[in-house]
Image (cartoon, rainbow, N blue to C red; front, side):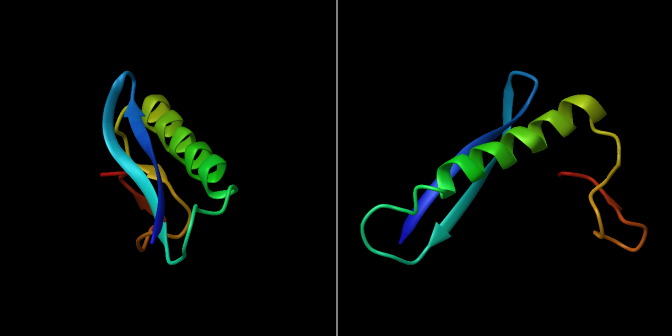
Length: 69
């Protein structure tokens, strides 16, 4: 297995982690690292901008809103 992970932050505090685990040998696909980091940064920005309010995440739940935690 190969894995790549990145922290999700709310301000300066790490509140979660995002990871991808894929079967394989050797090192993970070099594209996974930047994609996981960019996604974790995007989630972090949403947490900071929304300060824990319910936000739209596109199709999650009946009313298309959800909390990140």
